Length: 339
Image 1 (cartoon, rainbow, N blue to C red):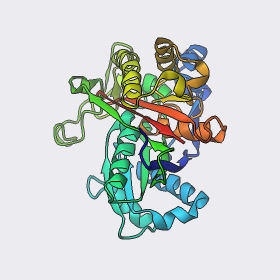
Image 2 (image 1 turned 90 degrees about the vertical axis):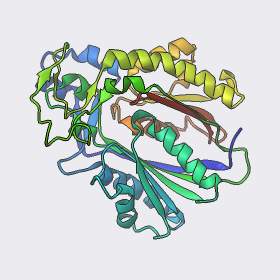
Image 3 (image 1 turned 90 degrees about the horizontal axis):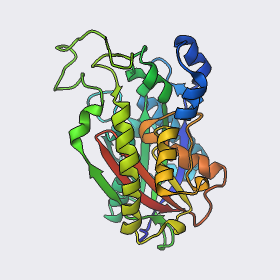
Image 4 (image 1 turned 60 degrees about the vertical axis):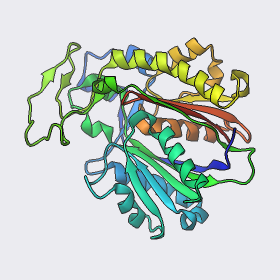
């Protein structure tokens, strides 16, 4: 089941600017603060400073990793950067980060954009690079300055999302008693419009499609150049697909529920996570939720939650953790990791 590839280190970065629910309510007095906090699980979220990009945050997360694990810097031979953002349309931000981090020129680098399932895709890509003999230590970076894409008057999405970045070192391991297991992936692209920033690329170039703001059925101000999420559709997709995904991951890795020490799902919001756990009849102690201080940070939610669980010693040596992501696309993916 397990491969000789492991998560050898993981660190995070959060911007200094903080938006609490109380500050958010000052901007949107109609928000019901207690209900908002209960449903989302978010008490505050971090906001990228003006001019602070996803690549800047990924750089800071990587610096934090190398400061704690200086021996890994000279051993890094590949960078994978997961983000819908990035400094330029081209070149890839991973190439720029190779230089900024002072890594070897023998280091491979590429970007990819996979939203909420990005960490699972990144783990699989890193594992493939190592198993194929292409690399031994892959720096997997996830970062999103998503608040820059949300309309200032969109109270719904501003209440849920936050900015941040994570850095994970994926490394070759000795033996087969630890590491990353087998993966399950899936896609239903018919729902691509339910989580979308429509304008800004080749299909709808901004120079041709400068459109006015409009309001949706819930009173949220929108613009096709800004982030949009169909909350009800995403909720139904998440709570139906995630339990099915968990069973598939367990089957793919010849495991049962009792053997898994912890379940870490994409941290979409508290009500989604609790509904998934209820459907699976999970012990609440095994359903690790880490949303209150960060909000939904897209591809970074799972590594943020892993890092938090490690800091609290909730993940210990030989702990078996099931990871499951779902969202933009609509895509989903999962695996198990033994630490």
